[in-house]
Length: 252
Image 1 (cartoon, rainbow, N blue to C red):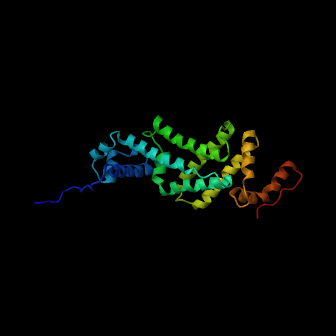
Image 2 (image 1 turned 180 degrees about the vertical axis):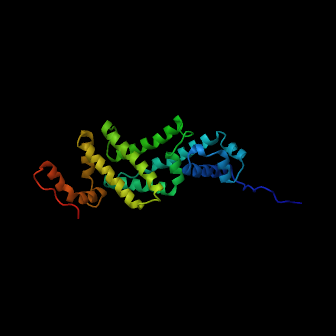
Image 3 (image 1 turned 120 degrees about the vertical axis):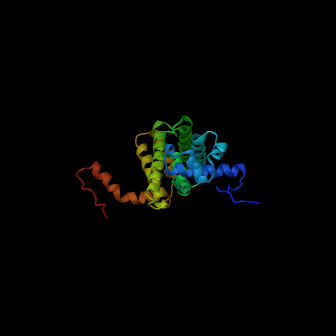
């Protein structure tokens, strides 16, 4: 004789399938709530399994789940900045951002779990994992600028831009993925060009890197497009240098 079980029937999975299922449930929870507000019971309920089963696969509990989630997201994101070195540098950067923002779009909970930590997440291991993403992304950006040993100003400029990419990506998710991702990518590329050129005015190494990069740009590259949009504002610089010259009207 057989009888129906009172509780849910667990679907038989391989060890790797079950582990992936539990991790996916945890990532989704971490991406929408602070890690300290997520319990093992929450993970078990989201995955439709028992609490002991979660501990069987993740004996370290919530901290281990968070660290694995962060590590997986980190490895994926670092690879998103690795694009071929052919073509104008700003087009390469746009291609890398397309890949990066596609991950943010498709894996919003994992991205949120990576960057939105809490007390449970703030350990030396998780900090090192997140910092590794930033260092890896910086190395890729500098590679496209032809720089292997950046000085402090160039290094800080690139790291500050990466921090801006992270902050803007999180804000974009919070705003319902608006503006459209293409506009977001174009704005971030413009932001990088602006930071590069401003830093080049005071740092010789950055000036050399900017000169090399600009020599490879084309009229239809992102840098070329920005140059066309900036051209009407060029008269403002002349007004600043010669205050007696009326400022041009650039409102139209």
